[in-house]
Length: 447
Image (cartoon, rainbow, N blue to C red; front, side, top):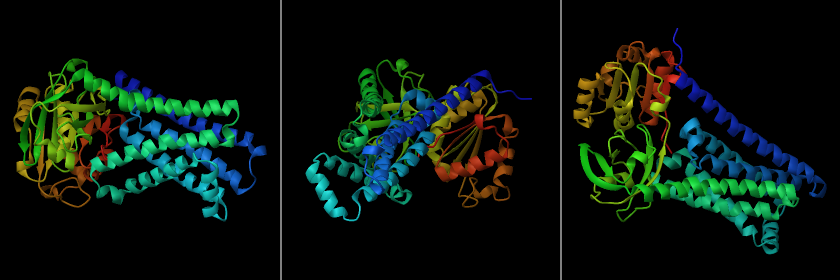
């Protein structure tokens, strides 16, 4: 019987503990909100307006939780994963928006225009609440899947940064004017939560990236074409041995090359960071990624990261099967260099639409010769819209093909990286082959 390695068990226990801690904090904060509201009900307006205050309190609490989830706290992200945090972030975002709408409807009553004017006249700081509403509307509008499809990542990311700044300025409105925060205990709890969240954002989203950028002073060394529309950027810097980056992780990169320099783009490392430099490989699909091919040597770089938990830390030993599509092969290539698998026990399934799209041919041949990596190229259009296979495998089901390509895959560590629809098809097949959840490594970088 196969037994999970101690390292994997320890990582799983740590992940469960962090998830439990996050859920406990969230539940505890919402319980505190209800208790503060109940304690102040005697002085609160009756009926709908009173429940409007409860909605406002819960909305404020979820707004703070929403921002905290995306504060990029390293040990939280390492244990939970950015994809899971993003799902929780979206859930708290939608719920807080609905609570805010409920608060507005319940608080304004039957004559909302007059009531809004009265509140703005009596409380100038209510302008912050208007900013909060506008920020949340902006976030909700640009988070809709159909809208995201038509937006460049750079613009979407910048809009959300401005929106969260608006929320950060507006939350004090509730703490300053809310009757539920007039007591010393409630006031202390509310401001403490705000300071903790703001501090986490300042330290991990601003302070740490600035410190690492200044410390390591990354610059572009050279840009090399790998395939049509695909280039690798080699970077050098100072004390890179102290940069806590691992193969399989990604950074948000800002290249100081003029126009659009402050727009960040998430790109994975495509080489092991232990080899004295960093390498990323980029496909020209957006405004920022298209500029990368024209970068000049010496261009300075701002970095945010590293992020991601699809690393060797979650590998417990034994055979490995990796499935990558297009530019999604880049973190898998880095992992093939880094993982301590035995000779002949690793398989890379590399999916492309055209033969000329295959990149890193020399490296893949070296890995095949020196480390026994088995390379399987799947080239061509899809066999079916919901399949991850090319047309040449039309006689196979997805699961049959996977078992053919990677026999005994249930005992393998499986790494998957590629476009979301393709990866979802792969994950369905992997799930049917009996691979244990702890052996499946997939992190979505979709925004």
